[in-house]
Image 1 (cartoon, one colour):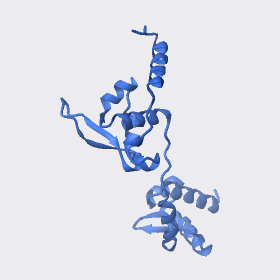
Image 2 (cartoon, rainbow, N blue to C red):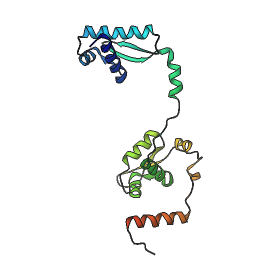
Image 3 (tube, rainbow, N blue to C red):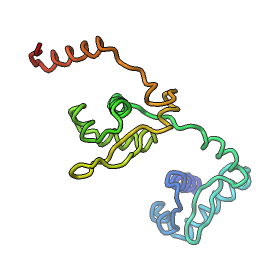
Image 4 (cartoon, one colour):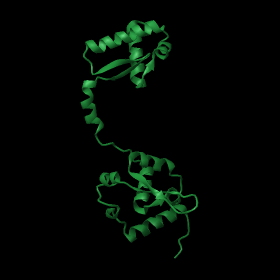
Length: 189
């Protein structure tokens, strides 16, 4: 490999790792001596300095880390403060709907309604800040009660859970009939 190829490999490693990478680890990855690895990284550091790049490589004891130049932090803060975009799959959205309409509700109650485990969906909703733990139910095992958050209200443009749209009784009956047909359960009159 040429010196430039080693530089590209070192650059890719430092960029991908995000955290600091020790001289020893980088040398092993490049299959070079530590002295040669130090020269390769110094070449990169010089190149970033000469090109007046927005990124730099800093040395931390016997390690290096690729990072943003401190004078550019204001720009990073602007983008970091943008609202998060959530990936609300059908499963996550269904679980959120149950929590919104039934709150406070336990995981077991959600699973009874959905008929399947909801652990992943509940964890995603907690990560997104759309639901929170409201406390514990006074029952055996003290299950956690879940409810929606202010972030949920903001995202769905409602002032309170009371403002959520309601479903008409006709629609509920229609859904019940469809569900019983799918499950092939005889309808009791």
